Image (cartoon, rainbow, N blue to C red; front, top):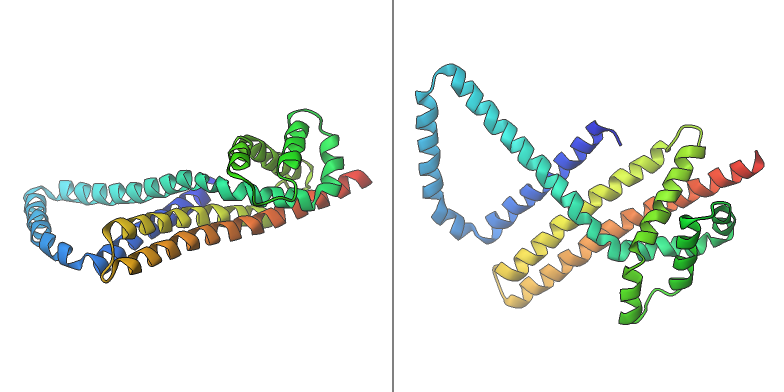
Length: 249
């Protein structure tokens, strides 16, 4: 992903986060906002008076600085959401290992040709996960220790496609990765909203707030894992096609 796409991704997710926050506070905390409105208006009047007293050159600079700070704030928000989205690995590792299990027939041959850390990681994941999804708490904690193995295995597949494919990483795979990362950031936004609703509540009963909070939490997980699953389908399909082509050469 080039720099321009990364800026667009962070800008879009950062803007989505702040728009969601504005809508939430406007709908739920309208009375509190009305009480704070006079203070905001006074501050804006002081700022307007200050800027009018400045020469024209400084007025332009002040406006440009505010615009720059706003854009930087949105970009940094998107960056933070992207970083926090990595915590979805708790669920993504399960999906990755499902695909490893479904494709073990050709993956066994491909990984055996690459001895070393990748081979060891693959064997550990196959032994620990297998076809079992629901496990005990003790096994779940043990699986958390295999997150590094999942990351290295996923990186190996990306690298294999990039090295042995004709044109590097195909555009279809790049699009799915971009969508997956965007869905991660949007999922974190939903998680933040669910926590805010659970803590600060909604208009109505407490049970309504709890139900809405749980719904947003589940929507966040569903949105992220659906896009991640689609990305894995493309990743494993391209890896299989690349491996088959390499064997014929």
